Amino acid sequence: MNTFMPKRTICEQIGAERGNMGDKKIAVVVNNVEKEYPRGVTFEDIAKEYQKDYDARIVLAVADGKLYELNKKIGRNCSVSFVTLKDQSGYQTYKRSACLLLVKSFTDVVGEENIRDFIIEFSISKGYFCSAVGDFTLNEKLLKKVKKRMDELVEQDIPICKISYHINDAVEIFRQHNMTDKEKLFKYRRASRVNVYNLDEYHDYYYGYMLPSTGYITSYELSLYDDGFILQLPTRREPGVVPHVEVPEKLYRTMKETADWAKGLGVATVGDLNDRICAGEFNDLVLVQEAMQEGNIVRIAEDVVKREGVKFVMIAGPSSSGKTTFSYRLSVQLRAHGLRPHTIALDDYFKNREDTPLDEDGNYNFECLEAIDTEGFNRDMTALLAGETVELPSFNFKTGSREYRGNYKRLGAEDILVLEGIHGLNEKMSYALPKESKYKIYISSLTTLNVDEHNRIATTDGRLIRRMVRDHRTRGTSARNTLAMWGSVRRGEEENIFPFQESADAMFNSALIYELAVLKQFAEPLLFAIGRDDSEYQEAKRLLKFLDYFVGVTSENLPNNSIIREFVGGSMFPV
Image (cartoon, rainbow, N blue to C red; front, side, top):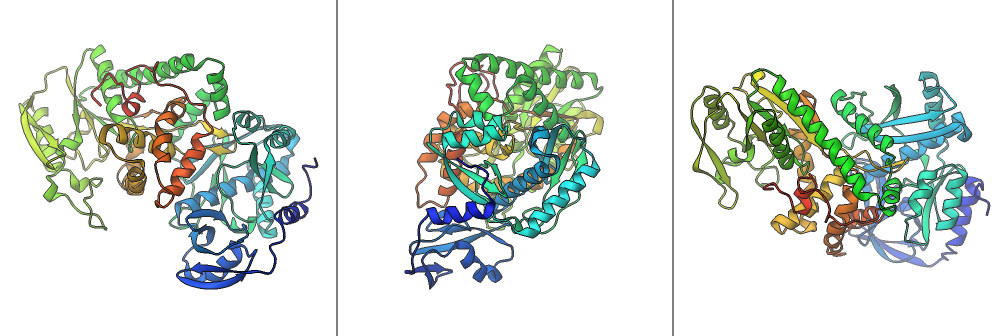
């Protein structure tokens, strides 16, 4: 098999293999208007007609509820709508395609034979931190050459072709390209065929949809950072503007330390994880991971103890980060150091339901700071700091009101409050408390495990799957409802949590390198329950495809104090 045919030949062959569509007309409905087109017209052809009606570039199509790449030919009557760069799926498609452009260009500049590793590591500063190792020097001069090559490929508007290969042929292609991570990934692939993308004779595999050609990838920058570089990309809100690189240093260090630890452990990709599971080494992996996390918790506890005057440990992080389990485990370590910790949920200071502000859709906005009685919180905490006895509230989520049930507190010399809630890092939450009395911790599930070297796993996907499993187990919430409200949750995080993360005294990464293999068995039945007619169906389908990469494992032998127990059940803590 010739795997290095010229790009035009490959694209022409794909069209020939799909057959001659003929001259028959088909009816396509767009924006409730039906028009006739020749059978075999592409979604891109139709998108060009309607681009003027959209405020961002069209990058994908939806036909009868199913997502399609724009270069797909239409062979039947259908109803069509379009996805732009401002939509989540469209934005991810842009980022994915930009990664292909980058890898191809880097390979062209330095030569494939000179690259030992090229890894798109993790998200940072509205882009990706990348590392490259081989027989070259990574410097500004080299990055300028890579950027120039990217620009050339964009100017040439080269097609990005999707080719279906038998799994064995795909493995052989990636073996020739020395992409051993993909070869390992496909070892566990159940399907007999796999889609491979071709860009100007360069083959690569990507998890998800791609743009039709390089001409769509118009905004990007490259900049050196630390021992790698950053591919800076535009945002969803302004898809044509590349923001300046602003790296959150504490977050970067946390991500980098975790990524380096995973590489040292030999589990940097899903294929690595699957290999360890199939070799019977899962329990050992769990013990090592849990020991690493416990060590980090010990170090944070020791830092709290060393700080004079600390009476309030403020813990904040995005949804499904494992804040509750972490607060209990930290409390155990604080007790081991001679302190008497008391855990308090900031949610207990929610305003009564009738006083809760509404969002732009008229729904209760529980994510905003104004939903919290900050005045009452600061009054109580100030009184405790002054040595007074205070009755603390409990919020009844069923009645939507605060209640007082005789929970009296008074802080002695060894007493310390461990406060957990999304606004814990915001100074407006604890405005009346002296700075030296507070120790702030940012916690999030920051996975650095990648599908392969060029396909990273979004940290938001890990948290979404965690939440889906937990909410179904504890609240009976369907996966469809969790998916439906996830966008609102994410907006709340962007507004109320992420802007304050760098103010933390410590960061804790709650991601477990093995957790998606465990969550798979719980999440898949929930996702399969989402119907084809539901608006969440495409997202459910995407997540199912993602989970299919993992070899599933049982949760039976997991420690009962593990953070993952907060989601799958069986925790020793009241979570």
